[in-house]
Length: 597
Image (cartoon, rainbow, N blue to C red; front, side, top):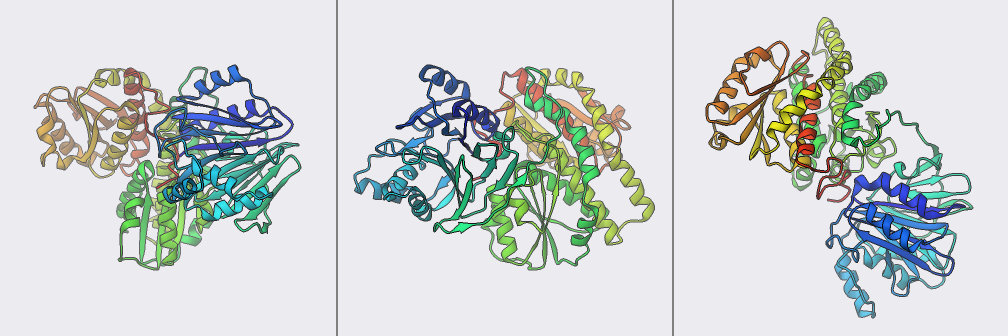
């Protein structure tokens, strides 16, 4: 949820930390702060609100030092105020701490600290960490960090500096992501590589129960009992991304990068590795994910049912964690996550693995916890995504899952060679068709302008279009704040039709020619009651759709259409949000990577 960074080296730390925090701001932007070792003491500057507020405060105080930690916050405990912003100092200013995660036992720790005379001044769970380390310090910082880490429960990634070691920072990891980076006479820790990639050429993704001691001289790794651990730094993988135009929103830029992401995913799909995993007999295929990743899995479910005559059980990861019984030991679990650090998805995978499941993941980050847990990881290779709303990463997930479905159908003999070749041709053509969709964005902006003041927006579809509707609805509500829901079109008459009136919009997704008449009837049901209808239809069937607005996408196999309709619905949400004056890259109350339950 939050983003943390730490730097030690030959440069002034503040510019490095601020640049890193800008790269991490997608993880949270309620408040931000930095702590510097100034030579004799620790200096902290922190502010509520966007990073620009912190930058202004730093210009006034001008703290200096070559060792520091920084934080950008997504509030979980305590409202977003200057006081509750990170970093936190221990009572006498000897330790400074930044934290990503949740300290589950902070209430009991806080009570214990108060009994020892510690005055806690914030509403956060994170403040107790600084005081706990200070309490255990008896002359050795590493020992104090270890003892505190063993006492903490919950999920946490920590950055720690102290007055006692002017050239050392510590990183601590349990169930929240943290990487260590090595540069030339400078080293760092960060929530992900984006914050330190420009000066750290080698990286190590920390694992649970590890503490990194990072100095200008090098990096050492320990467990929570202080025992040394070996590790290898790996060269940083180069990211292929088109440049963002000046003043362009990240979300808009990332939507336009979708065709390249599709092409990259198609060319890098691990055919042989997938065949090895899919060739095994399984009693069940289980799909787990959250949010957009879960919606991508629904498209996979629909394709597997039709192409491979195979039922996939899909579960929202958080719900799967609460279920008891019904487990099948010989299961293939398909886990989907952009970051590979989604807390509920990781816990769901761990639960399934305890039952003996094989795990195949679809992920965009090779150096992630999910990839390490997986027997096979399909890396979507869509490049870094900074906007909170998933755009190219969602489409890349759907694309990879469709390729996986085709491979499964081929291996299991569920599809003829001619049909397989036809579908492979269709999926290979999707990058070019995605380009054509993006070229029509000017019309989408006009449609969005008409709908910007809608009282409610309902997304409707059948089959794969229903799954696409769910994702379209999510996009609209998360960045424009309009009320929106998605339903199967056939459910319209079972309650939702009562809400159709002037000021309400129905977005009907209609890409399957076999369902054209049913979809036309849905449009009529909406418009005859005074509501407005927007149709997203394949080119071959759009003349049959008598709606207020018709948006066309290139013809493709109906099972693959969510790849194209997703781009339309993303741009629709984007332009609606822009027309409403919303911050499309940083929607309120949300963060990109949900690393806590």
